[in-house]
Picture 1 (cartoon, rainbow, N blue to C red):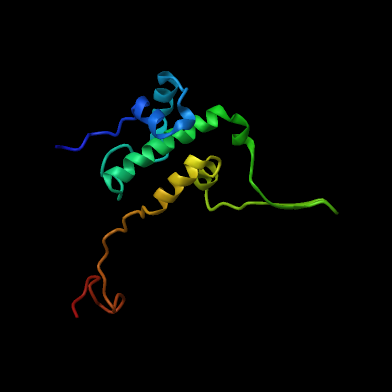
Picture 2 (cartoon, rainbow, N blue to C red; picture 1 turned 30 degrees about the vertical axis):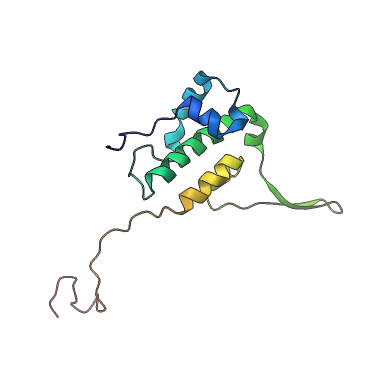
Length: 142
């Protein structure tokens, strides 16, 4: 069996695996599925994940989008990490980047964040030498 060329979100599978969306109609699921590529690749093997984990990530991204559509007030919040009453002080959660902040707004996004944290971008191939500046493999002979 050959792997699919793209990962397609099936509305029936989404509703079965994620009961929160059991009453969601196909049109809304398909519309949300079009934005999944903003969070995770829908091309199998494009990122360093097993096919099962990548499919799970695609479904989680779709659920994250749907969850925010159903709860629009969450998109305008920044998680508060501490607050005090006297002298009115507050501290907000600090995020590493915008993607982490966006995914922290739903339980589906948090699970997707865990999956995406396993993916490391490939490093460029570089010659290695203990003597990089002393005519090692960077243009000279040892």
